[in-house]
Image (cartoon, rainbow, N blue to C red):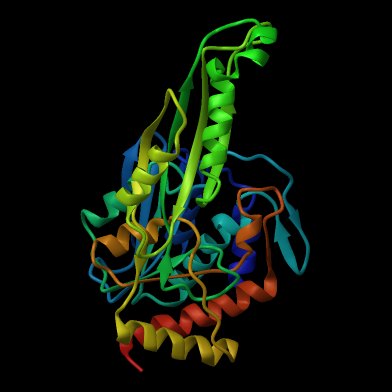
Length: 333
Protein backbone atom coordinates (compact mmCIF):
# COMPACT_ATOMS: atom_id res chain seq x y z
CA UNK A 1 0.00 0.00 0.00
CA UNK A 2 1.22 3.49 -0.85
CA UNK A 3 0.84 5.55 2.33
CA UNK A 4 1.32 8.84 0.48
CA UNK A 5 -1.39 7.91 -2.05
CA UNK A 6 -3.81 6.94 0.73
CA UNK A 7 -3.11 10.20 2.56
CA UNK A 8 -3.66 12.18 -0.62
CA UNK A 9 -7.03 10.48 -1.08
CA UNK A 10 -8.05 11.76 2.36
CA UNK A 11 -6.78 15.34 2.18
CA UNK A 12 -7.91 15.86 -1.43
CA UNK A 13 -11.37 16.70 -0.07
CA UNK A 14 -10.19 19.04 2.70
CA UNK A 15 -10.41 22.68 1.68
CA UNK A 16 -7.25 24.66 2.45
CA UNK A 17 -7.49 27.92 0.54
CA UNK A 18 -4.68 30.37 1.27
CA UNK A 19 -5.26 31.99 4.65
CA UNK A 20 -7.82 29.30 5.55
CA UNK A 21 -5.58 26.29 6.14
CA UNK A 22 -7.04 25.41 9.55
CA UNK A 23 -9.23 22.43 8.46
CA UNK A 24 -6.24 20.69 6.89
CA UNK A 25 -4.02 21.52 9.87
CA UNK A 26 -6.64 20.08 12.26
CA UNK A 27 -6.80 16.83 10.29
CA UNK A 28 -3.02 16.44 10.14
CA UNK A 29 -2.62 17.28 13.84
CA UNK A 30 -5.11 14.52 14.78
CA UNK A 31 -3.26 12.07 12.54
CA UNK A 32 0.07 12.93 14.17
CA UNK A 33 -1.47 12.64 17.64
CA UNK A 34 -2.66 9.11 16.78
CA UNK A 35 0.94 8.17 15.98
CA UNK A 36 2.40 10.02 19.00
CA UNK A 37 4.51 12.23 16.75
CA UNK A 38 5.30 15.66 18.27
CA UNK A 39 4.75 18.82 16.25
CA UNK A 40 4.63 22.56 16.67
CA UNK A 41 1.77 24.78 15.57
CA UNK A 42 2.61 28.39 14.71
CA UNK A 43 -0.48 30.64 14.48
CA UNK A 44 -0.26 33.27 11.75
CA UNK A 45 -3.55 34.96 12.53
CA UNK A 46 -7.11 34.08 11.64
CA UNK A 47 -7.45 30.52 10.31
CA UNK A 48 -3.83 30.20 9.20
CA UNK A 49 -1.05 28.09 10.75
CA UNK A 50 2.36 26.62 10.08
CA UNK A 51 2.76 23.00 11.15
CA UNK A 52 6.34 21.86 11.85
CA UNK A 53 7.07 18.21 12.64
CA UNK A 54 10.28 16.71 13.95
CA UNK A 55 13.48 18.12 15.44
CA UNK A 56 13.89 21.86 15.83
CA UNK A 57 17.53 21.69 14.77
CA UNK A 58 17.74 19.61 11.63
CA UNK A 59 20.23 18.73 8.92
CA UNK A 60 17.36 18.55 6.45
CA UNK A 61 13.90 20.05 6.22
CA UNK A 62 11.27 18.79 3.80
CA UNK A 63 9.22 21.91 3.10
CA UNK A 64 5.92 22.40 1.35
CA UNK A 65 2.87 24.61 1.66
CA UNK A 66 -0.55 23.78 3.05
CA UNK A 67 -2.55 26.28 1.04
CA UNK A 68 -4.07 26.12 -2.41
CA UNK A 69 -5.49 28.84 -4.59
CA UNK A 70 -9.27 29.41 -4.14
CA UNK A 71 -10.29 27.23 -7.06
CA UNK A 72 -13.30 24.93 -7.01
CA UNK A 73 -13.64 21.77 -9.08
CA UNK A 74 -14.40 18.07 -8.98
CA UNK A 75 -11.96 15.71 -7.29
CA UNK A 76 -11.61 12.42 -9.15
CA UNK A 77 -9.93 9.37 -7.63
CA UNK A 78 -9.08 6.11 -9.34
CA UNK A 79 -6.73 3.29 -8.39
CA UNK A 80 -3.96 4.87 -10.47
CA UNK A 81 -4.30 8.65 -10.05
CA UNK A 82 -5.99 11.55 -8.28
CA UNK A 83 -6.99 14.72 -10.09
CA UNK A 84 -8.60 18.07 -9.36
CA UNK A 85 -7.74 21.57 -8.11
CA UNK A 86 -4.88 21.68 -5.60
CA UNK A 87 -3.84 18.04 -6.07
CA UNK A 88 -0.41 18.70 -7.61
CA UNK A 89 -0.02 22.17 -6.10
CA UNK A 90 0.49 20.96 -3.60
CA UNK A 91 -1.54 18.42 -1.61
CA UNK A 92 0.58 15.66 -3.13
CA UNK A 93 3.57 17.34 -1.49
CA UNK A 94 1.75 17.50 1.85
CA UNK A 95 0.89 13.79 1.60
CA UNK A 96 4.51 12.90 0.78
CA UNK A 97 5.89 15.01 3.63
CA UNK A 98 3.52 13.61 6.26
CA UNK A 99 4.09 10.04 5.05
CA UNK A 100 7.81 10.66 5.46
CA UNK A 101 7.25 12.05 8.97
CA UNK A 102 5.54 8.79 9.93
CA UNK A 103 8.60 6.85 8.77
CA UNK A 104 11.65 9.02 9.52
CA UNK A 105 11.79 11.02 12.75
CA UNK A 106 15.24 12.49 12.06
CA UNK A 107 14.04 14.79 9.29
CA UNK A 108 12.11 17.97 9.90
CA UNK A 109 8.83 18.47 8.03
CA UNK A 110 7.72 22.08 7.56
CA UNK A 111 4.16 22.60 6.27
CA UNK A 112 3.78 26.31 5.66
CA UNK A 113 0.81 28.61 5.14
CA UNK A 114 0.01 31.32 2.60
CA UNK A 115 2.64 30.47 -0.01
CA UNK A 116 0.15 31.32 -2.73
CA UNK A 117 -0.53 34.81 -1.36
CA UNK A 118 1.47 36.66 1.30
CA UNK A 119 4.42 34.28 1.76
CA UNK A 120 4.20 34.92 5.51
CA UNK A 121 4.46 31.22 6.32
CA UNK A 122 8.05 30.85 5.14
CA UNK A 123 9.07 34.18 6.67
CA UNK A 124 7.61 33.15 10.05
CA UNK A 125 9.27 29.75 9.82
CA UNK A 126 12.70 31.34 9.41
CA UNK A 127 12.29 33.29 12.64
CA UNK A 128 12.72 30.02 14.55
CA UNK A 129 14.19 27.38 12.23
CA UNK A 130 17.36 27.22 10.14
CA UNK A 131 17.92 23.74 8.69
CA UNK A 132 21.22 23.03 7.02
CA UNK A 133 19.47 21.93 3.80
CA UNK A 134 15.93 22.08 2.43
CA UNK A 135 13.99 20.15 -0.20
CA UNK A 136 10.92 22.14 -1.21
CA UNK A 137 8.07 20.07 -2.63
CA UNK A 138 6.45 21.58 -5.71
CA UNK A 139 5.35 20.01 -9.03
CA UNK A 140 8.46 19.64 -11.21
CA UNK A 141 7.58 16.53 -13.25
CA UNK A 142 9.57 14.70 -10.52
CA UNK A 143 12.74 16.43 -11.70
CA UNK A 144 15.36 18.06 -9.50
CA UNK A 145 15.58 21.84 -9.57
CA UNK A 146 18.55 23.61 -7.99
CA UNK A 147 17.40 27.01 -9.27
CA UNK A 148 14.11 28.85 -9.31
CA UNK A 149 12.69 31.94 -10.94
CA UNK A 150 11.81 35.09 -9.09
CA UNK A 151 9.08 37.49 -10.09
CA UNK A 152 7.83 41.04 -10.26
CA UNK A 153 4.12 41.69 -9.93
CA UNK A 154 2.05 44.84 -9.93
CA UNK A 155 -0.50 46.91 -11.77
CA UNK A 156 -0.22 48.98 -14.91
CA UNK A 157 -2.54 51.98 -14.92
CA UNK A 158 -3.15 54.06 -18.01
CA UNK A 159 -5.09 57.32 -18.06
CA UNK A 160 -6.98 59.17 -20.77
CA UNK A 161 -10.21 61.06 -21.26
CA UNK A 162 -13.70 59.82 -20.55
CA UNK A 163 -15.63 60.15 -23.83
CA UNK A 164 -18.27 58.75 -26.17
CA UNK A 165 -17.15 55.52 -27.92
CA UNK A 166 -17.44 57.10 -31.37
CA UNK A 167 -15.10 59.90 -30.35
CA UNK A 168 -12.76 57.41 -28.68
CA UNK A 169 -12.45 55.56 -31.98
CA UNK A 170 -11.15 58.77 -33.56
CA UNK A 171 -9.08 60.11 -30.65
CA UNK A 172 -7.12 56.95 -29.87
CA UNK A 173 -4.35 59.14 -28.50
CA UNK A 174 -6.68 60.04 -25.60
CA UNK A 175 -8.07 56.51 -25.07
CA UNK A 176 -6.93 54.89 -21.80
CA UNK A 177 -7.71 51.39 -23.07
CA UNK A 178 -5.67 51.92 -26.24
CA UNK A 179 -2.76 53.19 -24.15
CA UNK A 180 -2.96 50.10 -21.95
CA UNK A 181 -3.00 47.72 -24.92
CA UNK A 182 -0.05 49.51 -26.49
CA UNK A 183 1.89 49.25 -23.23
CA UNK A 184 1.20 45.51 -23.00
CA UNK A 185 2.32 45.14 -26.62
CA UNK A 186 5.56 46.98 -25.81
CA UNK A 187 6.12 44.54 -22.92
CA UNK A 188 5.55 41.43 -25.05
CA UNK A 189 9.27 40.74 -25.45
CA UNK A 190 9.52 40.23 -21.68
CA UNK A 191 8.26 37.05 -19.89
CA UNK A 192 5.02 38.79 -18.91
CA UNK A 193 1.76 37.20 -17.79
CA UNK A 194 -1.23 39.57 -17.75
CA UNK A 195 -3.46 38.22 -14.98
CA UNK A 196 -6.41 40.59 -15.23
CA UNK A 197 -7.63 43.57 -17.24
CA UNK A 198 -10.21 46.09 -16.08
CA UNK A 199 -11.81 49.27 -17.40
CA UNK A 200 -15.21 50.44 -16.21
CA UNK A 201 -17.52 51.77 -18.87
CA UNK A 202 -20.44 50.67 -21.02
CA UNK A 203 -21.79 53.66 -22.92
CA UNK A 204 -18.53 55.58 -22.75
CA UNK A 205 -14.80 54.97 -22.86
CA UNK A 206 -13.41 55.28 -19.31
CA UNK A 207 -10.65 57.62 -18.21
CA UNK A 208 -8.63 54.79 -16.66
CA UNK A 209 -7.67 51.24 -17.65
CA UNK A 210 -5.70 48.73 -15.58
CA UNK A 211 -3.85 45.46 -16.02
CA UNK A 212 -2.42 43.32 -13.24
CA UNK A 213 0.75 41.60 -14.46
CA UNK A 214 3.43 39.22 -13.30
CA UNK A 215 6.86 38.94 -14.89
CA UNK A 216 9.16 35.97 -14.33
CA UNK A 217 12.79 36.60 -13.37
CA UNK A 218 15.34 34.00 -14.40
CA UNK A 219 18.46 33.30 -12.32
CA UNK A 220 21.03 36.09 -12.62
CA UNK A 221 18.44 38.59 -13.91
CA UNK A 222 18.44 41.74 -11.79
CA UNK A 223 15.03 42.77 -10.41
CA UNK A 224 15.80 46.50 -10.50
CA UNK A 225 16.93 46.30 -14.13
CA UNK A 226 13.72 44.48 -15.04
CA UNK A 227 11.67 47.06 -13.17
CA UNK A 228 13.38 49.79 -15.16
CA UNK A 229 12.64 47.91 -18.42
CA UNK A 230 8.96 47.65 -17.50
CA UNK A 231 8.60 51.33 -16.81
CA UNK A 232 10.49 52.38 -19.94
CA UNK A 233 8.14 50.26 -22.08
CA UNK A 234 4.98 51.96 -20.86
CA UNK A 235 3.10 54.31 -23.11
CA UNK A 236 2.14 57.93 -22.51
CA UNK A 237 0.23 58.59 -19.28
CA UNK A 238 0.81 55.07 -17.98
CA UNK A 239 2.44 53.98 -14.73
CA UNK A 240 3.45 50.73 -13.03
CA UNK A 241 2.64 50.22 -9.34
CA UNK A 242 4.93 47.55 -7.88
CA UNK A 243 3.23 45.10 -5.54
CA UNK A 244 5.75 42.28 -5.08
CA UNK A 245 9.36 41.59 -6.06
CA UNK A 246 11.44 38.48 -5.43
CA UNK A 247 14.84 37.63 -6.88
CA UNK A 248 15.55 34.26 -8.48
CA UNK A 249 17.88 31.82 -6.72
CA UNK A 250 20.49 29.25 -7.67
CA UNK A 251 21.91 26.65 -5.28
CA UNK A 252 25.68 26.19 -5.50
CA UNK A 253 26.43 23.92 -2.50
CA UNK A 254 28.37 21.13 -4.21
CA UNK A 255 28.02 18.51 -1.46
CA UNK A 256 24.25 18.98 -1.26
CA UNK A 257 23.87 18.81 -5.04
CA UNK A 258 26.13 15.75 -5.36
CA UNK A 259 24.32 13.76 -2.66
CA UNK A 260 20.89 14.55 -4.04
CA UNK A 261 21.94 13.64 -7.57
CA UNK A 262 23.33 10.30 -6.39
CA UNK A 263 20.12 9.50 -4.50
CA UNK A 264 18.03 10.56 -7.50
CA UNK A 265 19.94 8.32 -9.92
CA UNK A 266 19.53 5.33 -7.61
CA UNK A 267 15.75 5.75 -7.72
CA UNK A 268 15.11 7.10 -11.23
CA UNK A 269 18.04 5.62 -13.12
CA UNK A 270 18.97 8.76 -15.01
CA UNK A 271 19.38 12.34 -13.87
CA UNK A 272 16.58 14.72 -14.87
CA UNK A 273 16.83 18.38 -13.89
CA UNK A 274 15.11 21.67 -14.66
CA UNK A 275 14.81 25.21 -13.34
CA UNK A 276 11.65 25.90 -11.36
CA UNK A 277 9.86 28.46 -13.57
CA UNK A 278 8.04 30.28 -10.77
CA UNK A 279 8.60 31.73 -7.35
CA UNK A 280 8.15 29.36 -4.38
CA UNK A 281 8.95 29.25 -0.68
CA UNK A 282 12.31 27.96 -1.88
CA UNK A 283 13.24 31.51 -2.83
CA UNK A 284 12.70 32.72 0.73
CA UNK A 285 14.78 29.89 2.20
CA UNK A 286 17.55 30.29 -0.37
CA UNK A 287 17.79 34.04 0.24
CA UNK A 288 18.27 33.19 3.93
CA UNK A 289 21.38 31.18 2.99
CA UNK A 290 19.88 27.67 3.04
CA UNK A 291 20.85 25.39 0.12
CA UNK A 292 17.56 24.47 -1.58
CA UNK A 293 16.37 21.89 -4.08
CA UNK A 294 12.83 21.85 -5.48
CA UNK A 295 11.23 18.56 -6.38
CA UNK A 296 7.83 16.95 -6.66
CA UNK A 297 5.35 14.96 -8.74
CA UNK A 298 2.87 16.61 -11.07
CA UNK A 299 2.96 18.66 -14.26
CA UNK A 300 3.74 22.34 -13.77
CA UNK A 301 1.69 23.30 -16.83
CA UNK A 302 -1.50 21.98 -15.17
CA UNK A 303 -1.22 23.76 -11.83
CA UNK A 304 -3.78 26.37 -10.79
CA UNK A 305 -6.32 24.63 -13.06
CA UNK A 306 -8.94 21.89 -12.47
CA UNK A 307 -6.71 19.61 -14.59
CA UNK A 308 -4.10 19.03 -11.88
CA UNK A 309 -3.32 15.36 -11.37
CA UNK A 310 -0.80 13.05 -9.73
CA UNK A 311 -0.35 9.39 -10.53
CA UNK A 312 0.15 6.69 -7.89
CA UNK A 313 3.42 5.60 -9.54
CA UNK A 314 4.74 9.19 -9.37
CA UNK A 315 3.98 9.38 -5.65
CA UNK A 316 5.59 6.04 -4.90
CA UNK A 317 8.77 6.95 -6.77
CA UNK A 318 8.87 10.40 -5.16
CA UNK A 319 8.48 8.86 -1.71
CA UNK A 320 11.29 6.40 -2.42
CA UNK A 321 13.57 9.25 -3.50
CA UNK A 322 12.70 11.46 -0.52
CA UNK A 323 13.26 8.57 1.89
CA UNK A 324 16.70 7.90 0.43
CA UNK A 325 17.61 11.59 0.19
CA UNK A 326 16.58 12.11 3.82
CA UNK A 327 18.83 9.30 5.00
CA UNK A 328 21.73 10.52 2.87
CA UNK A 329 21.48 14.11 4.06
CA UNK A 330 20.87 13.33 7.75
CA UNK A 331 23.20 10.36 8.20
CA UNK A 332 25.65 10.65 5.30
CA UNK A 333 26.34 8.33 2.38
